[in-house]
Structure formats: C-alpha cells, structure tokens
Length: 193
Image (cartoon, rainbow, N blue to C red):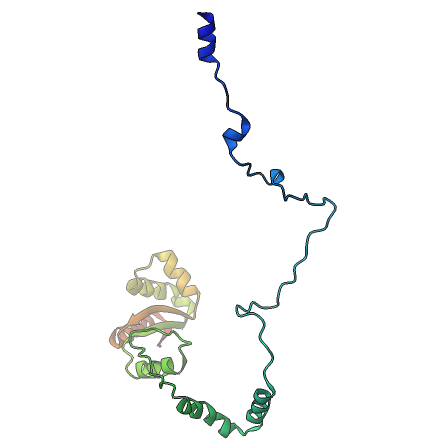
C-alpha cells in the first residue's frame, strides 16, 4: 500500500531535450564563437546624409557641359528654360490650387497676401487698443474696461496697467467707436485697429 502511495506522489520527469526541444540558447549552437572580452566595440561609418537610392554615379561630361552653358546664360534666358522644357517634354500644365476656406496665416505667401489685401478693403471686425490714460483717471478707465470686457476688478486693473494693450477684439465699427468714446470720457486714449 505504501508503495502505491509513493508511486502516486512521485512523478517521473522527462529528460531535458524533451522539455526544451532544440536548444535556442546561442551558446549551445554549433557555430557560436564567443566574443573577445578585451575587444573594442566596432565603429561604423555613417554617411553624412541618408540617401535611399545609394551612391550615384558622377554626371557625364555632356551633362556637366550643359550645366556650365546654362549657368553662363543671362538671367532672362535662364527664366525661359523651365517653361520651354515643360512644353518640349509635354509635361501637363500645373493647375492653380483653390485657397478658399484655408487660413494661411500671416506668412501665407503671394496668394495669402492678395486675400489679406481684399480683407483689409472689406474689414468688418475691429480691435480697440488702449494707448494711454491719465493717472488721475485710472479708476474710471478700469471701470469702463470692466463694463465692456466682463473682466473682474483685478483682471481689468492688470489689463489697464499693461498699456498699450488690446482691450476688445473683433467688434463692429460702431461698437469700437462707442468704446473709444467711453474711454475718452473716462480720461483715456484708445484707437481702433
């Protein structure tokens, strides 16, 4: 009975190759050569810039002569090379891209500047800028600024003390004129931008 109990609790474990299968550890593979511990790390030469197409052959003499002749041309004739080559090689003409609805910001380029000029001509939103105020009328100016900006007393005071500063942005011309008149009556000087 004891022998049967002992046999139940004792399991025969399989040998090592049956557990692990082929050994994956690098040291056990037949072609493994250990690294020399005194060896210095390899230094690779990296190219100064990445070229996915690899090294290119140098241009032929014909191309070099053509480049020299183009460089020797006057500026007016050099400007004609691009369009002439495009016609000769039958490249499709580039279509202008519509910029409607795209905000190009202040650095928008030539197309953006023409849009900006049109907007300046039809300007509907104005900004009111507080230029200066009398120190005796500072409290009155702060009260007026609070009236049309919905700022708290502390924020309005800090805003007024940062003169010159924009106090209201994106208002109509009539609203801007009203604000300027109120600030003028309180003892400050404001302008419309």
